[in-house]
Length: 136
Image 1 (cartoon, rainbow, N blue to C red):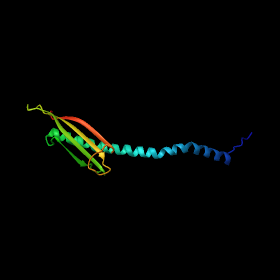
Image 2: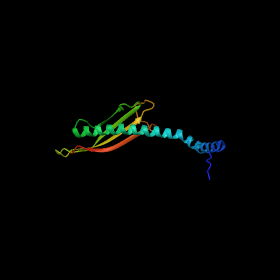
Image 3: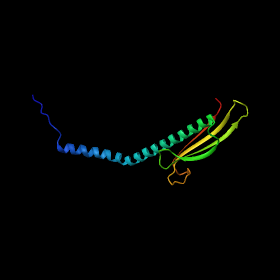
Image 4: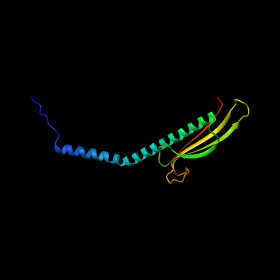
């Protein structure tokens, strides 16, 4: 007995393509929101990297004695419309040799969309707070 191989008819192929299209249509509606979320996360990751870099720079400067308490702001290197602001406050300072000091450091990186030179509440931003000591 010889088995006859039969292929799919054109009608069967069209019905399966139609069903596949109906299943994928709702997923395609999610695509724009997924792209926007990806861009938002990428921007926040870049802001976090800029803030972390500045925080590390300030911490090392305080430990070496080349930075001092105060505040400031600067553009993020390599990122357009990005602003990093920082504030360093002396929390404790000792006159005893080799005891050191304790500083509170706050760094904020934001996407300064309106170029105001300040991080405003409605702008995406990342903020890090830490304490730094000069004691070895």
